[in-house]
Image (cartoon, rainbow, N blue to C red):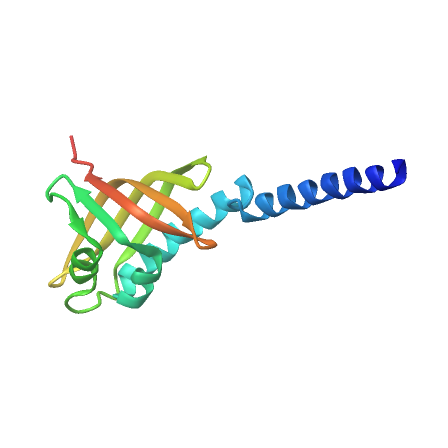
Length: 156
């Protein structure tokens, strides 16, 4: 009887351990790895904008994505994609991402940084500096952008 009781208790402890381990596996990736993934997604986003790659942006932006800026009220994913991919590709356009930092809290990640955009508009060179905040969520095994805000840094 003692052996059967010990076997039942051991089985219960083992089953609980397996359930707990499965919960850990379902959690978002480790912090350092997640931070690198999020920084990579921001870089992929910038590259997709430069290429006018609508499908690439759709992979990064959640269907519920919301975008705001100093000039625009809230808009959705498709409006942002249309704005960023319309017109001719500017082969001179670059985006230099700097001062990035990542904050993680469970299945939410926030990336803040500076994006210096350079290119040509009808042959005239331009440069603008943007501060950004992007909120990512970890869903169905991968990270997607849920919201972003961009502010242009005005020259003083």
